[in-house]
Image (cartoon, rainbow, N blue to C red):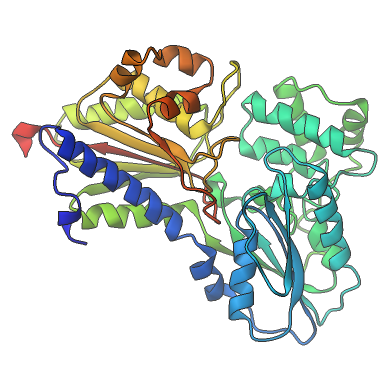
Length: 445
């Protein structure tokens, strides 16, 4: 790539340099999304045709796009059904596409889960189930365990989302209150062969955590799920407590005889997206460093830590320092937000606002943070951009950064400044994406 696309990425920061840095940050976010598109990833992992029928099922924000990629690259007969988030449907000819609510489940998700279970019943050993799983599948397959209701699931889901629990903790609870997750969907496919094509949106790519693992075994227990609820003081109906205490809603374990014919492929991951972003930055003449693809913790605390790292890189040209400006620090993972205020939430924008508050206008440090599925929290906004003058501009508009952070209203903060990043449905989901650009000091250029 010619560096002429970004004519001024260092030096003293005038309007031209700010525009170039904004463009670079948006471009590396875009390429992180593009590399994980089902259109390019799915065809590489399609299995050989079975002797019997091919049934396609799936759930997640990318599942409809994955289904379309299967249809476009499969010459034989197939049929199936997948469920995706409202607004993420992609028209298919042979695979039925359903839509439901995310992140809080609804009745359409319940109906979709029931239809998927029915579609895979009565299969033979000659049949194959191609399961297309991506992030968001937990909410889109809310079929409750026997004795529970959809209302129970909705109440617990809302409480978990506001609690600050990690995605692994939330999905542990979801698996053990489900009639379809935690390997149960794979068991329903038995004795057919199951081939999973999975787009990971969780730290460390834990298969049982992606959409709460409907077609993989799970080593966690009902006791683990109960401990999560107790840890975050989440009140649940008596039926939920009784179910977990008795262990009768246990998920399927690795030695379950119904799970021997399962083949799983991770077709896109957060690391893949970060590597693509790093390549683009390097092509633009900027050093790129991937810190981690699995950062977790409170979004505002991660923002403080990243601010300290960025400031150290910018100010201290120490001999042992591995990072040399101008550079981009890249990271992924899934942070959490404990809702205490009345704002609109969003873990990526909360991270970014906390980063900005900690940097306090530090010259030469810019950032972007966004969710690769195009939805940060419950907003149809992917994330936002941060510049050295962000806090000063906010104060001129009468917006107080600390008050916005305390109210969990980072979306409102960045939207008022015109700094939101809106992608629309991206049709993929490889979790959070963060990039911090650190310019070289003028006397070091």
